Structure formats: C-alpha cells, structure tokens
Image (cartoon, rainbow, N blue to C red):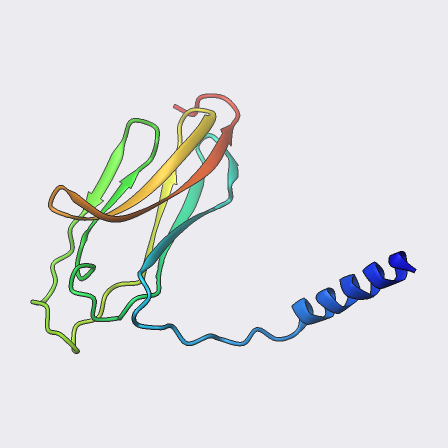
Length: 140
C-alpha cells in the first residue's frame, strides 16, 4: 500500500513539473541575486568556454548596481575587467544591466573556480562563482 502511495505521489510531482513554465513577477523589494553558469562545464584545454552571469531580482533602477565595473577572475591567475561608459544615473529612467557574458580559453588542464564580481571602484557589490574542469594537455 505504501508503495502505491509513493508511486502516486511521484507521478503527481512529475506531472506537475512537466507542465508549462509560468513566469513569476519579480518583487522590486527583493535583493538582487547574481548567478553564474558555464557552457560547457567540462572542456579540453584550448577550447572556449562561455560564461553567463545573470542578475535576478531587485528593481531595474537600482542605483548601486547601475553601470558597475565587471571583473572576471578566471582562477588561472588571470583577471579581466571592463568598466562601461554609461549615462549619468536617473531614478525611474536608468536601468541596470542584467546579463553579462564572455568566452574564455584555459591553456592548462585542471579544475578552476571562476568568479564574476560587479564592483564600484575597489568595492565588490555582488559576486557569483562557478566551477569548471579543463582536460587534456597544455594547449600552448
């Protein structure tokens, strides 16, 4: 009997997860959350890996997160940094950037922790990290 109940509950849960995805409105009072993903997560030395950071939640006109310096710490003793040229901030008009993407090539095999930092001068405002694995032999 318990087996049938568990099977029914599993089927019910599976059926609910297969349905269409309904977008959820974001509450502007929520704190922003930065997420980072890599594609692929496992690659061979010398191949590009695509990194995408997504800023979720919070208001679109968040002054603190408007036009930050974008820093990528590759975990291989190299760092890339970009400071965009933006118009002055206007409350209710200016919108924060929510997607950050870049490709990076690792020359050596190993496991790397890649970090994305959104900064204002030397202060990190928000950050995210992901781990990847590079296989094969030294590329260069």
